[in-house]
Image (cartoon, rainbow over all chains, first blue to last red; front, top):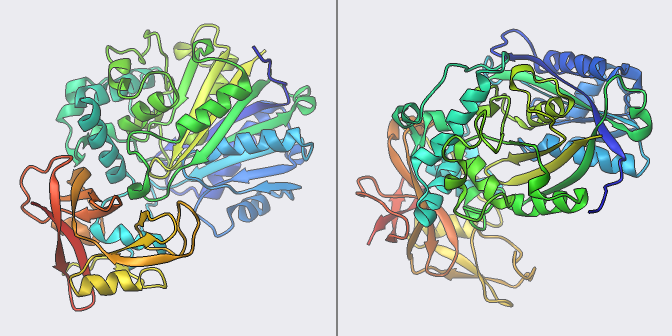
Length: 381
Length: 131
């Protein structure tokens, strides 16, 4: 087994207020999360020499955010590939540190999409959007529904199997005081919830919340000065396969196939070595497709794989241990919260929902309409 | 009155939308690798050739996937429920479309043919209906 060189680590994580947070701007949410994450690391603002963020709240989010925080970074990266942007930010931070370009990166996200929804009424659609938008498919949910319908047709996947993902997430959320939805649900509850886009029901869909998060990544040298033990970035991979759902090469195979292989190869570990996985659950189908493409099971077998509460507390495949985007929070681009939970599990900070002796975690983000995939493998000493 | 988002015609899309106005479905083919191409563009996404030709599609194909939409935004709310599909044309390319209102029990792999949904003088959309 190749032992990955320990070059960069997550040393601080934090959320801002989550859920329904009226009267706070995206900058306030990010400032709060950034301050708490730096406190968590035991670092000061002036230790930060690289800035990463993603959002559509400014034409140049990095510049607006860094100015607000009073940071003049020597490295800046505004990669925006949707909800998986933050997995890529961690990957790019590790690459930058490996290249010796900086020592401490601050990655933030904030959204007020619940209290301050912004959905522009498009009257004109340009460039390649013009071949889809006039048909009225609601995005992103409609695109994921198209993938779910195809998966059901090809493999006989059932609504009950999709519902397993939502039910398991809710049981984890019951043990997370920060989760928005904590009352238990059954498979029947998911099936009885109203249709959004067939075959997806309301409870197959993530929450719509406000919230922000931050992650601090440090070089091995800088990590020596951190308050808490490092969560090493052992492997990472990313790709995007399409932009519009019509141009996804195969509606049942995501780019996780590529990003996952890259990450496993770099980390030099196998699936069986992992103790916990955090997989972006924008919709229940997102998880099933990711599990297959990441190689946890064969194509078409993910429905069977998650059945019987396998990913729920007490199951042998602990997944989305904070309650996920389905039950904990989902402020638009959820990927940063996957990283926060994985780091906490590896540090043993999760209280009631803590997994015993978790050493290795896989974090997988999906962005756009199954468009982007970004995988990070994390481990502690 | 429903106002759907209007396409902004450009150097790639002008001929496509003009064709639809005349009740013709035009796609493209690469002169070098002979693959069909949709949506229209100036370079072949397969072999990167710039030798692209417009060809008229036969307008038949099958449903690659579909969804019955029960929740929509803006001008589409008043049309609920409706069926959005991805159709694979017999030429091998896929396009997003709407199934004609009232199409009963759509299914994946079902054979369909194009119909032309004229919204107004300027804009005609390619919808499909079961054969």
